[in-house]
Image 1 (cartoon, rainbow, N blue to C red):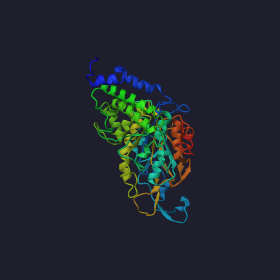
Image 2: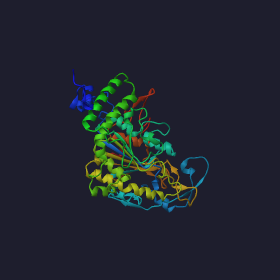
Image 3: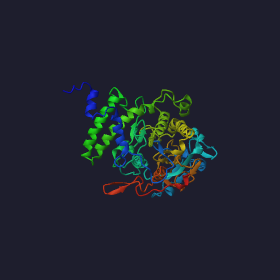
Image 4: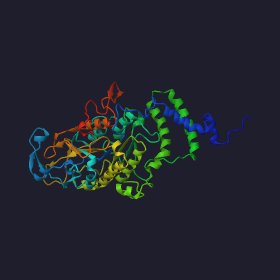
Length: 465
């Protein structure tokens, strides 16, 4: 008679076919060897890429272009002047609005002489690495719709987010971490669908990381001993794969199976990625992070750099949620507090990536859902309203020309005057820099091929190196 199985370890070794020390190797080698059936397998783009990854910085609420990166001396000179807004807005009827000057002065920075307001002095120090887009525009002046469009390309319907499309197109280079991660204290307008995968395989949706002492729950293994956990996961994987073979069309099941596999890898690698104890005092100071801190936009930026180093393909950083944000209807003074929270961390991120030799392969994009009006119906009002007809964004690194201002608005910052860039154009350019043709990156759903840029969008070639 065979001796009884006396331990959990022996049971798992027997149940898993006696893999023993080879259990983990068998589990992961199977995954790494399969590229045709693995939606997360690393894949080449359509052509050589300039960027290997994206860090997408999103400021929720609508940042005023004329108070940040779009210098308008004429707006200052004509402050308080009444204008007929229909002249620009192409709306019926004649209605008066009063021009409101910027609340902050502008200065020229760097060799490029790019104008930046006093809200972003640290950004001024790295402006020669930045390409400012001063003629952005989008299709909606509603927060939810414009936020959805900024992330998914559609202002009307839930669609896969840009990060999900990148994950779908290129896969991951590190199976121990998600290919798409979102570092945010809260969701922006439109909620978690801004990082959703929609009809793409669920494994491509963003993993939400909430700043704090436990940014991702359950990262600490509950099973004592790595080898024992490996044995358990090997058995679980074997059973799950067998179950999935009989249900090959079940995407939700496949995603769940892969989530268990990714979760094990994250327990191995994510804790170290979020541990800033090895960072020098100089680096912490660069980002404006106090040692031991686990919150704040500086923490988000520094962790993003660490995750980028470890192969995460698309990182989104949201500075605030859908409340207490840049939506400054009542008082533009809120911009000062909000800008102070992100100015040094973003400049620190650019400088840190550059000195590590990563900026040239990392595309950084900063945007908001829209801008704010340079005028108001009340001549003495302290705020500004929504304005989607023109606003400012910027790009840096990853094949983008630094020290460039592309496009410009009219003399008051109301409409694009030249070089307009639609949201679809921004997305097309992002994909191009990653080596993907936005017209060829498609997914067939409900009888038609979908893409991030819908049926529009063009690459902004003028900003490319």
